Image 1 (cartoon, rainbow, N blue to C red):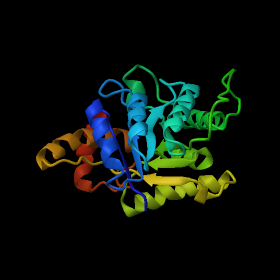
Image 2: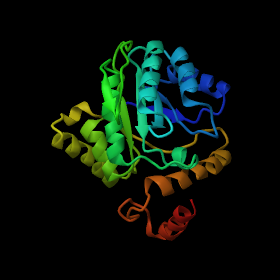
Image 3: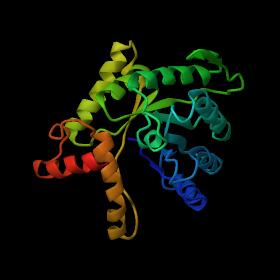
Amino acid sequence: MKIGFFFWPYDVALVRAMAEAADPCGYDMIGIADTPGIAMDPWVATTILAENVRRARVAVCVTNLVTRHPAIAAASIASIDLLAPGRAVLGIGVGHSGTRNLGAPSLPASELAEGVMFIKELVRARPAPYRGGTAHLPWVKRPSPVFLAASHPRSLEAGGAGADGVFINYGLAADNVVQSEGTVVRAARTAGRNPDEVEIWQIACLDCGLDGDASRRKIGAILAFVSAYVMGGGDLARRGVPAKHRAALQELRRRY
């Protein structure tokens, strides 16, 4: 099993502290979330990581292809690879709050899959068409893997069909894990791919700190996000939510 973590880059000191801790603590991946408005630019923060982390993989986990054109995302991750050779990972998702707060829609899973395939060509230094234009990054040294963040069946299928890996945020109950990973595996096989070639990382939401009460207060915002975004309009019973919490969770989701 490999273990990594990603975080919101609130300031330079935090990013540097996380970078300094990643290798000594044995983490396999360290990632930066793209959350405009409340934290640093993810690419600036990831550059700091890439310059200070020597062993762990460095990921943007995750950005979107609405506020950031896929050709720009491809060039950005290829640039990070120059600082962390062979250890750069690009994670992309549909957008959600990162696009909604800017008045833009989230990207449908089918269009997200289109962006993934376009980026995969670019990071292999091959020219590729995209919506009437063509891009080419001839200076790329090596391809960086492109991961797709998935919380719903369609995005899980898109990840299995075309991405190099999938960041799954679907729930950690045993049946949730079986269902989410099974969806990725089936989609890979349907696309004629070897499922073993698709990396799967399961996401757990937590807050770590010496002050337990403070951490519990902070985790509340993450839980609100998860209830509205990860579970969406899905069946709460199927997602493992106890009956006594479903009404409150539905209200939280409505108000999110």
